[in-house]
Structures are given as structure tokens and as C-alpha cells.
Image (cartoon, rainbow, N blue to C red; front, side):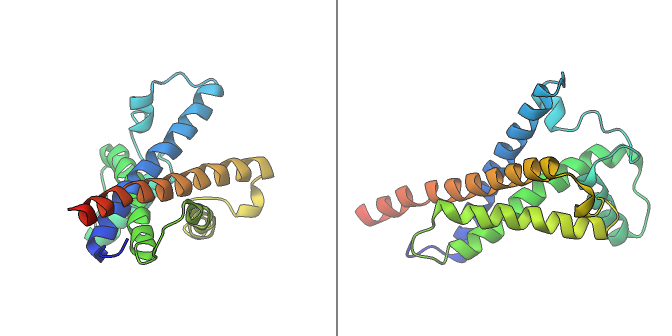
Length: 178
């Protein structure tokens, strides 16, 4: 990993975070289908059913609050789906960027570093989102729900860490060989 610039680590982390987000979404989609859901992956992934703020999930609400707070004007309900997708993917990609910046400074990134990444994001969600009024307090969820959610976040973390590691060594070896 010697010679990796901070910008390179961030870019690699962003790509890894996208891979982690997709892996987590694939797991959540599989659970959705096993639970009787019938929507195909692309419409499900892109939140095609989100048409307004009333039924919009937490990522859409976070995006809405950010835009409305920044621009000091109400965001039309037609933007709920876009806000959901942008916030969801930005969260995963930017968490990967932060991971890349931190782990890019160690000699050998380990896939196991994905465990604290995923667990940290899970815990942060249950601390921040209830405080924002978008989730109930963590104590109001049953253990099975929390365990499933933790598992999905651990998959994100481990996939992000694996992708980050996979994106690096071959390039480093190629540079040394050349």
C-alpha cells in the first residue's frame, strides 16, 4: 500500500463503498422477496414506489431535511424518490470514502476491518435517526429486527473492506513490476 495518496485511498474507498451498498441492498432485497415481495430488483432498488414524503423511508427524509435546511424552502413531494436514492447511495459511498482514508494509511488493510465499519454504521443509525425523529429508540425494536439490521450492516462493512483490499494489491504489484 506504500505510495497510496489520500485522494487514491478516498477514491478506492468510494468504489468499495458502492460495492458494499450493493451487497447490502442485495441481501435486503432477498429478504424482501422471501417475505413475499414481488417487485423486481431495479424498481425495488430505485424506490419506484416512493411517490411522496408521507411513506418515504428514512434516507429520503434525511435528504429532504438536508435540502430544505440548506435552501430554506420546501422540497416538492415529487423529489422523494430522488432524495431517497441519492441519500442512500451517498451514505454508502461516503462511508466507504472515510473507510478508505483511514485504512489507506495502514500497511495491509484487513477484511476484518469491515466488522467495526459495519457495526459502527449500524450503531450510528440507531443513535442519530431516533434523535432526528426518523426511527424509534433502539430499545423499542425486538432482537430479531436489530440482529437482521446488524447483519446487513456487517455485510456492507465486510464487502466494503474486501473490495477496498481487492482494488489495491494488483495495482501496487503492477507499479513495482514496471
